[in-house]
Image (cartoon, rainbow, N blue to C red; front, side, top):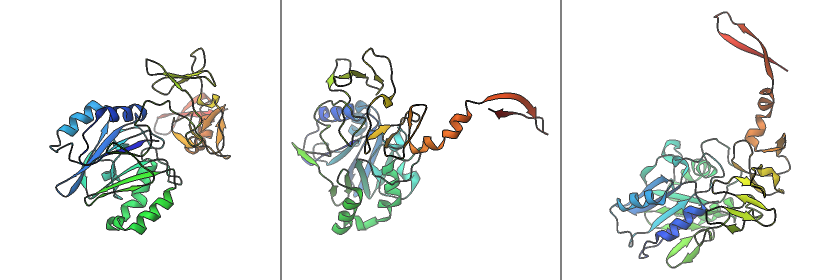
Amino acid sequence: MCIITIKQVGTPMDWSILDTCEKNNPDGSGFAYVKDNKVHIRKGYFDNNDMQTALEKENINLDETEIMFHFRIATHGKVAPSTCHPFPMTSNKSDLTRLRTTTNVAVSHNGIIGDMPTHKTYSDTMQYIRLYLGKLGKDIHRDNIRNLIEHSIGSLNCLAIMTVRKTYLIGEFVEDNGWLHSNDSYQNYQAQSLCTSTGTSIGTSVHDDGSYSDSQWNSFVDYDGNIYDGDKSKVHYTSYPRDIGDYIRCDSCDEMFFWNDECDTLNDLVLCDTCSGYKTLVQANTYKSNKKKKNKKGKKFQLWKK
């Protein structure tokens, strides 16, 4: 569920930390810093070498500048440069997707914010900023407002809100040698869990090629997240136990979603709310066309029937 990593003022850059963050959170990254009384956001990187090159071109003293980094694991919204963090704190959709921008406030998020409108492009973080944080303006500097934000997002979420004045942290962060981290995925390469809320682990042994295997279910997971059984034949995510409260992947769109007692399946596939709504359409695609007709304009169309 992502990681926010902040290099504090006076702390030397350590790209080995950021390399580990990227390896554990591979769905895109970005950074933000303050210069000339503005917060500068640069994002959309899928390789730390590219981000390092971009950062070195910013003409800042890296050791003496506070820099907020974010590395993403996608749970909602597409994997794309535009959905990488940080985001400007705004209600403007187009501003949220900009890869290079200056703003008064930048926001990075670690976790999953529930009850946000689902969208194929915009993540839960983008929706939360657009609908709520973007309307706060200067009120973000008020302690009681930030306390309300912390209460609303719950204890499993972390926010880093960088302003020209200071950076506010919401949630629990770990300090380690001048760096602040929203979780421990900066420490070493970890096997990813499909059921993050309950801690159910798929894979504990990391192999030389970057893949890892699991002793409990004798499964094999490669770097791309493909799951295999003991003889390395690909299987569905649905081959593994799931309980109420788990976050799992949809077998149709591959998005992570919250499993509850109302979630649906089709032909033994687990479907998220969006794909479940298309179930009738999926079933219709199994129909066969039996004849062709022409409309009055001479254009062909299909009649479908079971």
